[in-house]
Image 1: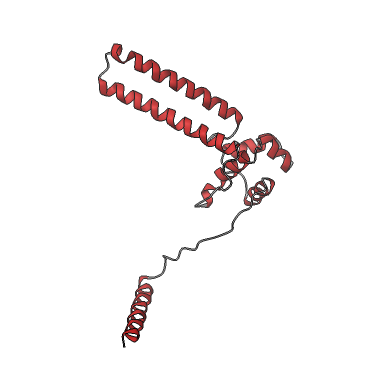
Image 2: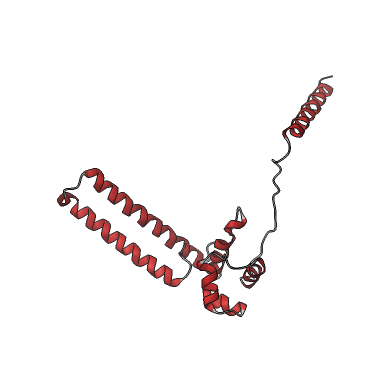
Amino acid sequence: MIKNEREYRITKAQVNKFEHALSQLASSDAVSGLHPLIQKAQRDALQSQLDELREQIAEYEALRSGQQAVISLDSLEELPQALIRARIAAGLTQRDLAERMGLKEQQIQRYEATDYASADLARVNEVAKALGLRVREDIFLNTSAQPSEELLVRLKDLVHQTVDSYLKKVS
């Protein structure tokens, strides 16, 4: 994931290098003397890396342009990446966020470089507030942990209720 303008510029430069390497590989295929399967593997590896870099650039550019209004999470593990995406989508640099929070830019850089591993929950909450995020606070409980015995009893009751209801309608 691209987290700032510097990484964006570096990634764009890497894309150019991969594109150049692919074109060089294509022009040297006939001359190289390598087995065609090895040549294909080389091309595929370079293309895969190039595609991944392009996806990262597209995501960063989409965030910067404000095209994304909602960032959905499936777990708390995704929260650090969501905070970074939210900052980019808000059009804020790491320096801007640091100023809003009364911190040094380097602190935000460290937080983001480590995906907020060193930040406590209070700090993460401060970051969310500084970004003006509105968080939907749903917590889904694990209901599949019910004992199987209890589940079977409930299922039998449901079947009996359904059959009784059907019989009443038929009678």
